[in-house]
Length: 219
Image 1 (cartoon, rainbow, N blue to C red):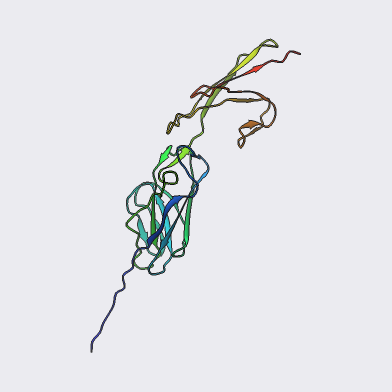
Image 2 (image 1 turned 60 degrees about the vertical axis):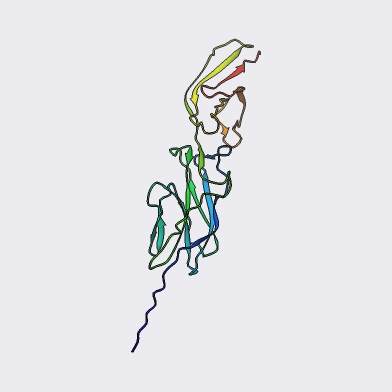
């Protein structure tokens, strides 16, 4: 009587399409804090098993988990896709935070959903071109602590609006600040303009302490 047993080893999914940012997040088009950064990639598993796309902040190989999503072994886990069919497009996304750095490295990984011995591909990907690749960039809100003006002033003369303001973002070029003074509280952050009357706005952008002027109308 002869007995034979065969052990079939699980193989990690392989890259069919490298990880890329779906919408470019670069020095020229950074992602505003509070907005979404998203990634996509395609992995194919030789066992036709589902897989996950995982985005980590370091190059340390992630930890696969039996019948559960993989996790980053170090650093920050930026994002993770849902369970994705082998050969299908996987997407992952995260909402950026004001507390994050201006420049943030990312590493894309793919891991399978094997219930016994799950595995991750040993190679990461970081994009295929200069604009949709690692790192992603966060555009932070400027600081704005004080506001004052030089009134009272006579009709026909100019009132100057002053601010204590600055922007800490320096990647690429130093970000500048603009002061917009409205006659009412209504303001559109989409168009960066007053919804009512605009009294004045900065004409020459500054790296800090932006100013604006308003000429008082003569009755």
